[in-house]
Image (cartoon, rainbow over all chains, first blue to last red; front, top):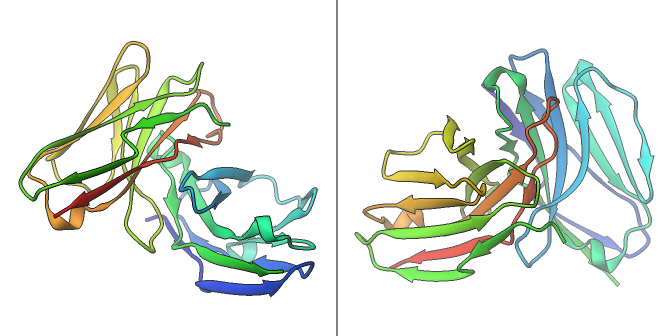
Length: 116
Length: 114
């Protein structure tokens, strides 16, 4: 069964500090996709990044970067030089090819509070 | 702006009633998914529609049902509402392309059952 675990529920940082969010996943599938979404207070989930199981290359996109390690089933996400606008709930999600559709399994989320 | 719109934004219903939530998908997206997000939790997959047919369902009872229309818009219907149905209901649309492309979400409908 697909499962996503985000251990830390709330993280507070001072503006300009870096913040790393941990995500551990479980899947029986060899082909799967991992995502990070941001949910501001307005409620809408905003897509941030996507990675497939065959590409472990870690990248940086602006202030966002991610570390995908299949050996430890982890897909961690870092915000560099945090800003107040980064305050939101961040969700890690998994989609398996097994189901033949784009159903996403989400973690419980990390509440990030950036203090000015 | 994602282009996925949901209506209404807020709704209050009484236990036992029925409710219909609506979603217009982003232009060019033919797949629509619905999620339930309880307070303080991550979204839970309800079901997905592709070409007007249900294409996958999560662990939700049959009183949760849906429709997709030829213009790809969708409805979520919930019968015999229970207090635990109080949640944010999110609609997501995506194009039907290989590789599980990212889903784009609407702002959600906040349902309160009293």
